[in-house]
Amino acid sequence: MKIILNKITIYQILFLGLILRVFALFYYSDVSLVDEWARIIHNKDISGVFGLNIVLSEYSADPKFAEIGEKVLPTIFMPPLYIYFIYTIKFLAGNFFNYVNVIVLIQIILSLISIIILYLITKRLQKSKNISILITSIFAFFPINIYAAVQISSVTLQIFLILSFLYFLSLPNRSEIKNLIYLSFFSSLLILIRGEFFVFYFITLVYFFYFLEKKIKSILISVILTIMICSPYLIRNYNYFETFVLTKSFGYNLLKGNNSTFTVEGSPEYIEKNFDRKNLKIKANNKYEIEVDNFFKKKAINVIKENPYNYLKFYFIKVLSFIFFDFNSTYPNYYNPLHLLPKIILAISSLIGAVTSLHRKDFFQFLSIYYFFNILLFSIFFILPRYSLILLPIQLLLTINFIKFIKGKIDLSIQK
Image (cartoon, rainbow, N blue to C red; front, side, top):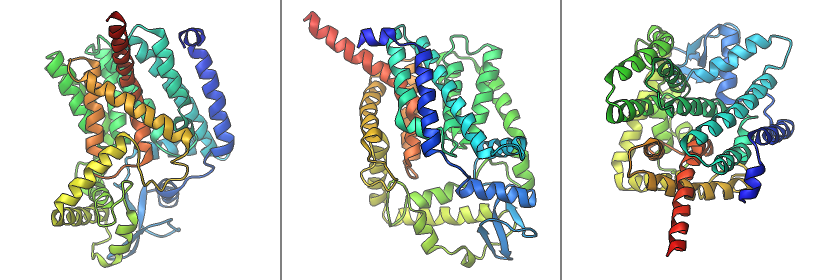
């Protein structure tokens, strides 16, 4: 194994990674927008408003494709960054290119850049070239990572951003103003692509700049920069909804993941079957999505209160499914050995790596906290297969500690 790894270079990994992604492009690539992405972009073209819901009557609105003359309500349901990413490429592509193909090609490039960034991070965190090559190779050739790059999904962009965030966070001089600017910039984009990232951003600031470095000034600078970058969208939301929030889907997601038809992946069918929006008597104005989400939140809390023991049990099932795998997944090809076996092996190695990293204050301890908190937070709602992909870089970095742990045990047994 050492001889093989010694002969592999990052350039060879990138070349083979490119070949595999081009192969995926021809056989598995999305050729059009789907679901919410398609409706929001279409409705923007028709009405000039990024929106999901179309007004049907004074107390009725539905998420659908708008026709000319129909009123589109501005959306606060989806995080904005990937929507803007799609729309910007569509605008620049014009009538010259199929913009969906351009999006996929850009995502392939971002996926390859992510490979480089992970390689640089692994080199910084430990001295072994062989371990860096091994970890980078797993990331580059992980089947779902290849597949995701050719799908219309925000996950590839999110992985690029989280690795960029970790790269600047892993710098020994991260508190310098230049690095702090970069760190805050990528933090802002992560918040705009996944609203809950602000929780992890807060954990990051507290861990590094308060507990480790005692630099309150760095925290203040970063918070100011991050708010400044996010402020245009916050102002947009205040103008539309009279509230300073990035997204509003907590209630929907809570009810989707916690109801009588329990599944790890959540059940949107339960909501559609039991709550006809036409009967909710919620006024179809700019605050429609906020009021609907508040309604779902109340229903979800009531459902959980009725049988808290069951939902505590369901919560732990979701935690185990996130760490390892879902025993009852409905996603196509989820149980394909090319997906499931690497996932299980990595789940075990990263879990051991996370546990063995908790006892000392360093970058790996932070990764362990990030890893466990991510799992515990998302399990409150529901677990989709792509959530594991979001954690993939963290799992691979924690696997470095797993390798060191196993190597230490082997060396110790040899000495005895």
